[in-house]
Amino acid sequence: MNIIKVDTDKLFSGINEYQAKFNITPYIICNQSTIQLIASQFTVIGSKEDILKFKETEETGMIASYKGYKVLEDESLRLGEVEIR
Image 1 (cartoon, rainbow, N blue to C red):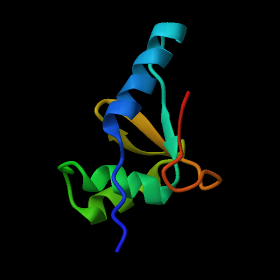
Image 2 (image 1 turned 90 degrees about the horizontal axis):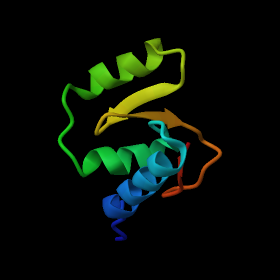
Image 3 (image 1 turned 120 degrees about the vertical axis):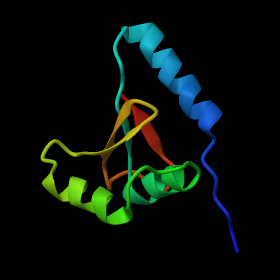
Protein backbone atom coordinates (compact mmCIF):
# COMPACT_ATOMS: atom_id res chain seq x y z
CA MET A 1 0.00 0.00 0.00
CA ASN A 2 1.36 3.41 -1.00
CA ILE A 3 0.50 6.39 1.15
CA ILE A 4 0.81 9.77 -0.51
CA LYS A 5 1.10 12.90 1.60
CA VAL A 6 1.08 16.49 0.39
CA ASP A 7 4.14 18.52 1.37
CA THR A 8 2.32 21.53 2.84
CA ASP A 9 5.61 23.30 3.63
CA LYS A 10 6.47 23.27 -0.07
CA LEU A 11 2.92 24.39 -0.94
CA PHE A 12 3.07 27.38 1.41
CA SER A 13 6.58 28.23 0.24
CA GLY A 14 5.24 28.45 -3.32
CA ILE A 15 2.30 30.57 -2.18
CA ASN A 16 4.60 32.96 -0.30
CA GLU A 17 6.94 33.27 -3.30
CA TYR A 18 3.98 34.02 -5.60
CA GLN A 19 2.60 36.66 -3.24
CA ALA A 20 5.99 38.32 -2.88
CA LYS A 21 6.55 38.41 -6.63
CA PHE A 22 3.08 39.48 -7.83
CA ASN A 23 1.61 41.12 -4.69
CA ILE A 24 -1.73 39.29 -5.12
CA THR A 25 -3.38 36.31 -3.46
CA PRO A 26 -3.00 33.25 -5.69
CA TYR A 27 -5.33 30.39 -6.48
CA ILE A 28 -4.34 26.80 -5.78
CA ILE A 29 -5.09 24.64 -8.82
CA CYS A 30 -4.94 20.85 -8.81
CA ASN A 31 -6.92 17.78 -9.81
CA GLN A 32 -9.68 16.22 -7.70
CA SER A 33 -7.45 13.45 -6.34
CA THR A 34 -4.87 15.95 -5.09
CA ILE A 35 -7.62 18.06 -3.54
CA GLN A 36 -8.83 14.98 -1.68
CA LEU A 37 -5.29 14.30 -0.43
CA ILE A 38 -4.93 17.85 0.85
CA ALA A 39 -8.36 17.71 2.52
CA SER A 40 -7.63 14.35 4.14
CA GLN A 41 -4.68 15.88 5.99
CA PHE A 42 -6.79 18.55 7.66
CA THR A 43 -10.06 18.90 9.49
CA VAL A 44 -12.83 19.72 7.05
CA ILE A 45 -15.75 21.83 8.22
CA GLY A 46 -19.03 20.52 6.87
CA SER A 47 -20.05 17.15 5.53
CA LYS A 48 -19.02 15.55 2.26
CA GLU A 49 -22.55 16.21 1.02
CA ASP A 50 -22.19 19.93 1.80
CA ILE A 51 -18.92 20.07 -0.13
CA LEU A 52 -20.39 18.23 -3.13
CA LYS A 53 -23.46 20.48 -3.08
CA PHE A 54 -21.19 23.55 -3.05
CA LYS A 55 -19.21 22.12 -5.96
CA GLU A 56 -22.35 21.50 -8.02
CA THR A 57 -23.69 25.02 -7.50
CA GLU A 58 -20.44 26.91 -8.00
CA GLU A 59 -19.92 28.15 -11.55
CA THR A 60 -16.44 29.66 -11.20
CA GLY A 61 -14.58 26.38 -10.88
CA MET A 62 -13.81 27.07 -7.23
CA ILE A 63 -14.54 23.96 -5.25
CA ALA A 64 -12.99 24.75 -1.90
CA SER A 65 -11.01 27.13 0.20
CA TYR A 66 -7.78 26.01 1.83
CA LYS A 67 -6.30 28.21 4.55
CA GLY A 68 -8.05 31.19 2.93
CA TYR A 69 -6.89 30.43 -0.63
CA LYS A 70 -9.38 29.48 -3.33
CA VAL A 71 -8.89 25.99 -4.71
CA LEU A 72 -9.75 25.37 -8.35
CA GLU A 73 -10.02 22.01 -10.07
CA ASP A 74 -8.12 21.18 -13.25
CA GLU A 75 -8.20 17.52 -14.26
CA SER A 76 -5.41 18.02 -16.81
CA LEU A 77 -2.95 18.07 -13.88
CA ARG A 78 -1.46 14.84 -12.53
CA LEU A 79 -1.84 13.48 -9.02
CA GLY A 80 0.25 15.64 -6.68
CA GLU A 81 0.81 18.37 -9.27
CA VAL A 82 -0.25 21.79 -7.96
CA GLU A 83 -0.23 25.12 -9.78
CA ILE A 84 -0.22 28.41 -7.95
CA ARG A 85 -1.43 31.37 -10.00
